Image (cartoon, rainbow, N blue to C red):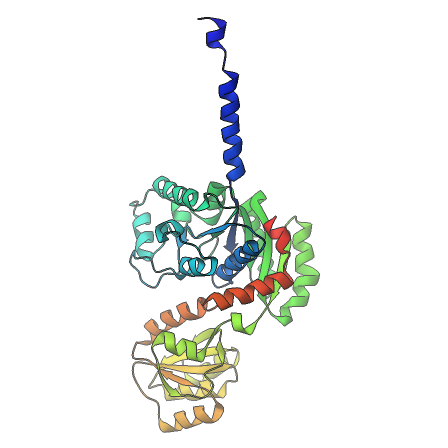
Length: 378
């Protein structure tokens, strides 16, 4: 063999390098929006950031590798977040790409039994991402519920960030200083990929402690805080009227349907215990049997109760209806049992922050006013 035969062709090498450089230049900047807990506004923040990037002239894409907001236990895709993303961002992507893994209870059971192959799932997710990211300037990837969801198939948010070479924005709640522990644990898990933390839905009472103590502490540890979004009532829950519609409930007392519900309490104890518990809650719906008159009375005496949801198809007495009407507390009645009603109400209230395009637009304005958007997107 001659020297000429064995020497590499510089033209081929240059062509190969040019091809690699061009492909790298086309890679979309990818931001994975993860969360410390469910119902922290992760979807609204991810889509609002994508809208802000669109307004800046970027061609953006979206993906939620693990569908977690499901309304059934079977494998049919019912996650509302990718559907909302298609509407808000004007995407034409297929659902099987936007949400390649339906993380349903059935899927989890199969995975635990060894009937789902992690390598195959990762390849499915990777291929879907490449399809969605083609010709995009930016990709916004939404984590699933908590950042550790998906670990049983090696698809927790940190695994996906590695797979996509993504930066990570962590969305966190804050009520008490001990909440910083969870932020540090998540930061350790994401390592150098962590681009920052945004605290969302922060109350006035918690704001000073967060700003004067917790944020300097985190930043001294190399964990940048990119924003503190204040509590905004319209993003913190659902109205009683919306809750009634979602539950298919009959409204027995109409007054007060515009009140916001942020949590629920189950009335399954004695009247004295119920009253003590109800007095410690705020903006709550009390779910209890329609035949539990003593619980109805206790709930109506608590200032933080915004409505009663009575289960089992029972109607309360006229005295209870009159008392509720006088106090302006709506009463809803459903035919389902208490357990089924609690599960459905939990889903509705938990997902209340991302109901529609208007909610995303509200979050877009909050981010523009209270977060370092340029630092998040750079």
